[in-house]
Image (cartoon, rainbow, N blue to C red; front, side, top):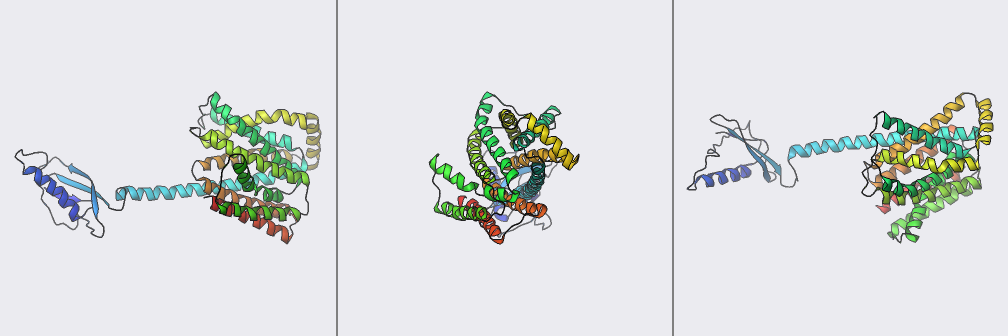
Length: 390
């Protein structure tokens, strides 16, 4: 019989052979394993004595007169066979590529949304209707996906929607407030103020939930608050409604995240379907308020004016901002299934940088040096916060 090793060492093979020979020396002879015959064939063995190896599997191959025993082994400081470890490295590399694609898509979609959203709001200053159309478009897209089996419909019950309701309320308020803000001030200014969301998160968590944080977390709030204040004071086109809209949006999204964490515990709904359900419930909540605040008469008059000034491409702007709003949020929720909250927070910080820089370039937003410094300090503080909270 020949004895071939895939990944092994002399000590490992000796242990196997000794155990077999001891059994054969007993009074009751076993015919399960034939005697071992060692062959010093360097072509068939790959011996490494740098690290001890452990036998992970022994199997007999062949039913002829001289069957071959294959011995698989793994290194002592590894938790699994070498082949499996190599596969894990490949899968980890593939996962990183997938996350990178998620991030790039998320940032690109968000930039496109903010550009078209601002174009629509400049020509058609009705943020309540604009917010409603964004949710309606996303809801319609997901209903079609479920009906055509492109995406699997989630299995939900009354308890799921009951838990989702406070999340939807907070999401609706945050969405409308951010849209109102961007209708009054520059996109870059809205996102600079929205970078102060961690300060609201710590405040709410400390006062309402009784949570405590390390000193580094509290220290990271200093550049966030200071940078936002400096950017607000030096903003050339400052508007109080726009400023308050961004601040309310921050507070609302903090509550959305808190409610969402509680609602997602033990929930089997995927991130994509979770956001789809959230959009539908938010649409139901928002529609009556949008009608009450603005109304069909104002919408119709503003629509005719926008079409006369911009032309048919205005319709494309509205459709684009609605579609891209849903897509960028959907991708962000899908990425949450793949990455840790810390990685997501860092990605969100980088997203704000891309939106601020691109909007300043595209809309030729005038920026003072002091204003740019304030924005940089606030964003740096957001990054430090995500690192400190880890």
